Length: 157
Image 1 (tube, rainbow, N blue to C red):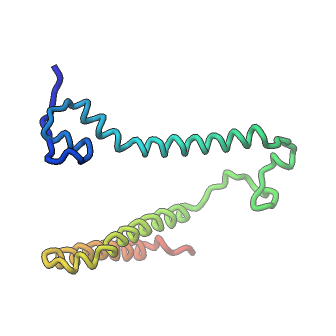
Image 2 (tube, helix red, strand yellow; image 1 turned 90 degrees about the vertical axis):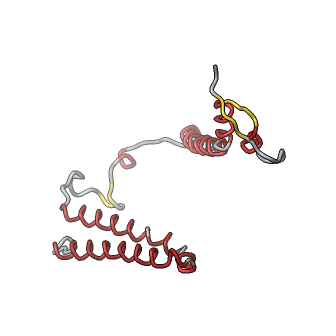
Image 3 (cartoon, rainbow, N blue to C red; image 1 turned 180 degrees about the vertical axis):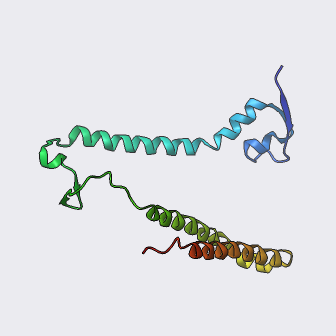
């Protein structure tokens, strides 16, 4: 016994998912119809992987591979290495990097709001809500910045 769904439409020239509106079709048929929408994504992934793998293989097959001591030696910006690569970094370096990422992501959240701010201002019911929503977001951003500044996390010494 298969489970089925009753779906239907009024127009026979519409896509398959809509044509089935008043027809009795099974769940696997609906799944197949829905998966058709993801086929271009699958093709894109397969083509991307094929291009990447083919470039690596072509370089490996047709490229010259003549290793010597100078080619295999590690270097730093064209200079010979002058100390061990396993040097401990100051924790403040990582702290600055994490704070940069944090504030950068928060600023990136402003872009979608800025792109629809005219639509929000045109809608009377959303005007006040949209304004105060962004005001709260910016207040959290400023309070976070003040906290980080007060703790001395941005002072490099």
